Length: 224
Image 1 (spheres, one colour):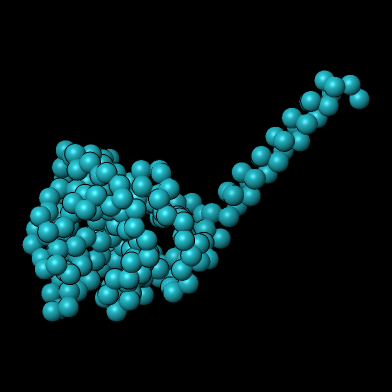
Image 2 (cartoon, one colour):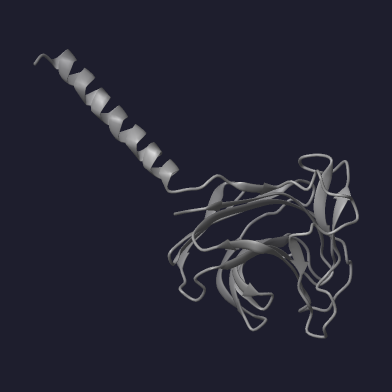
């Protein structure tokens, strides 16, 4: 076989391998579920969402759909707007019927205000509002952290120092398969770790203390 023919054969074989990998990846993931909140009534909590409770029994924040020209995908965002709270007041909202084990989970967030705390994050594999994994970004501390929360107590798994501009939207994304957790901030990988504490559970959103935060375009993709 002449060299030109060998090159063509090699190219076709490489193309087949690449296409096979893409098909295999597509076959291991289901279509994404998306919450953009644009068809919800402003001032309300979407019916499938459930607000957690603080340790004193009060609702864990004031979570509601807002109409705003600052939405990433107009016209609505989903917001935590209670601008007060104790240091360890974790504002938690869960999606009751979104149970997942292996997943891709993504949300866009815009920090609005906060003096004791700022920003927010993603919850996944939640048993309830006291037990879950958490990835959060904090513009006041200029870092991103991933926690395991058990009985309402956070246990730090990893920290990543990161400049977070409060004037623009950012994205957090989590991929969790088996014990392997990969977390991305604005499409840049910041964590790669393994934890075997929680195996499946609900997804949700999180803020802390007096942080007011807008969220948009929440997406969940089950991985098989």
